[in-house]
Length: 458
Image 1 (tube, rainbow, N blue to C red):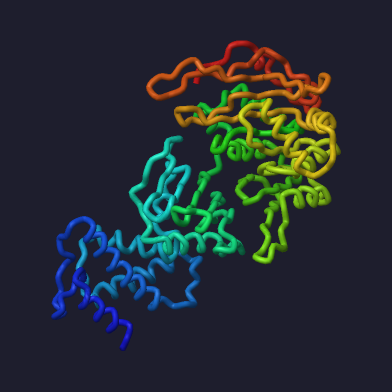
Image 2: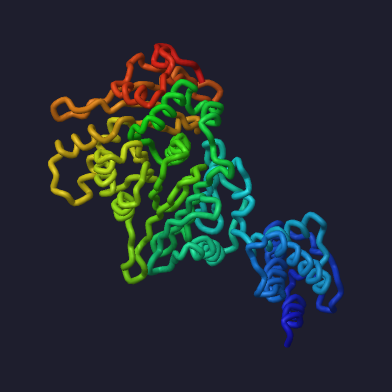
């Protein structure tokens, strides 16, 4: 029996089919919502299977426009052959869903295309949540089943040479646009396959955008630019989703064009608009537990690659010690991020991460390394209204006894909460940083009032 005959036979035996058993054509009947949904899913599944069977396997799927045109022609032919009558809107909706399944990431496609969505969280097939303007809300989109979610996860990770199955049930990956992806599946995820996507803007944000959004003041932005150009070592710290990577990306773009930049990341997501950039990405172990290349391995290796600047996407473990040693041995101007809730916590986190390197070093020696290597900590936070702001720009001044001395150059002062918005200002503290001579040696002369008292509301 031919494929078409099999589909027609299934359609004839399906009480929800748009065909009658006599083969007469009729439109999709008016049914309760749940039955309408089942009808639509049944039609979609049949047409999608037919369309896939009809497509030329030699088609270059990377030529999206050409493939879409071919699919649309076949789609119209199949609807005509199947004698399925749909309204224009349903017809377009059906085609877009099938195209998303074949060419893209299924129900995630409209969310990925929506620039207002910054994060997508799939908690099993029937629960998709999104973040918009810093606030979480449930999406109306759903997957068909656990298997459907697994197919989309596999489509994301396979081109990267990654795999996910019961023996390796979690994976970090990235989308073609650089968006960060984490997936975890049963038996570790009890609600079904779980997918988290941190989206990045198609057009990389600039420091002017951050000023416009109220994430930083013009004075603090000018100061950060001067610090990067003058080759100060900077750690961007903050909580999860606070905007650390975005700020690191912006600061990295202040690096002069004539310098060689090497980036080291778990999943490559930095978007540096520079010509001389080498991007390194870590690799997890294979199914036999071999072949792992860690961030620490890459940091150690990039020291032999003649870098002018080293940019580590995030320090999470023992690589922090290698990063500090690089900063202390001529690779100044390096940048990285760390998870911490305040500049003081950042120092503690760096200490802990250095101890994770397995070196039997006294805490004082580690603190001396930190105080000598790190010049500036930029603290980022997501506030209660969902906005992301720089709340501290803090100088690491050195050691006094066994304590690393910190001094705020800019500090955020919250003045109130009105109409769902945090009202405050990033104030200069009036203290002039001790490393100003490094900035002036780079022929950068900041306005005298940049560290003055006051500050602006935003």
